[in-house]
Image 1 (cartoon, protein in one colour):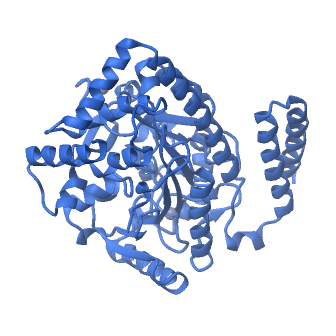
Image 2: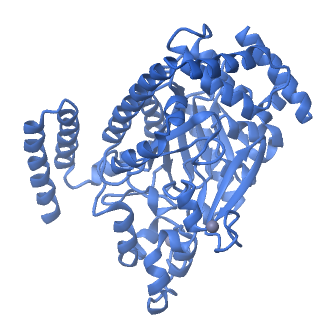
Length: 335
Length: 172
Ligand SMILES: [Zn+2]
Ligand SMILES: [Zn+2]
């Protein structure tokens, strides 16, 4: 069974993935911070029961304390759960489809975080997925709601639609040109947040950034999605233009071909070095310098992460062994 | 706990991250969090920040002594002091119990907005004027469209209509 990130998505030369999360709390239960483990599992059981009845066989439910550490971290590396979710496994359950495109984190911060993950820029489709699952669950579970404040959440910053939509963008050209601070301040005026996806917030690994909506109260889900989509598309355009400009420079061409050389030839490679080379190689993709399809390249952002490699090889690999295995897997794609 | 970046100020922002196959937590003061680009992030939703009181409820760090913080939510037993300290509500009823006290923080985070958008299956029946809300949502979508195609004349007209409807709704 393939995972969502192995499929093709729109604008995937720049946009890696789209995620739409909706937070919900079941009426009649205190918020997560005031629940004991038993009550938390009770909520998970209710969800399982509804899904078994309405969508039999579609979801798998896994208590996080029955999952090994490598798999826990791998789930976080692949964006399926938050680092917070695995920081304390007791009482927490992951409910997910086999391809991991639709899932529920049970008792993370709120009782339910319904989330959809799709490759590329697919905001409407991702919202549709999460929204449909929310509606289906709402028919049996009554969710905490107030007419003025909207859906009520444990943290007051999320009330209203309680929806966060985010797209992960790979912006090597704009990063190289020092355009990220300008972009970040521009999008913040439009009610969005731009921040690093992996590593440091201001200098992320592989020029991967997350763009997401900040406002949840006073804006409808559809309007928030549309707003995020149009700004994403404008950033995609700017990144493509800047990539083309870079390709005119001999100095950059040299950097590009050295990076492609690294991907094709390295025998030992860390995740960080791989991500830097991949980000630069992306600049050459629009010019046809690289024949590897974007979805094959994007997939590696998830599968080449340390814990995810451990899971793939069924053991906690020594760092050096892992770097060798990584180099082998990358060579296979780029040869 | 001191800030891991500057080592001078108290760390108030705690960020959980996965780095090199391991889960780590970064502790930063408010200034460093802002400087490193973490200040605009939210708790939860994949960002994993737990902000302490200065970040979420700055008005209460000053006003706390004069407020009655011992009041408790009858449903979950959470005191207002606890809400301010943790930045978290104990249950859905906390919102109505502490509503007046929370108002300044809520409007600082969200402005004066009220909810538009989806409401649950149970709310549609109890909603007093769903038709008006639907109209406003539709108009807002049209407004976004108009702005996108730079039809500013239409946008201005739609904006006035929305204002009139929302004004009317608040007076009801
Ligand atoms: Zn500091
Ligand atoms: Zn309460």
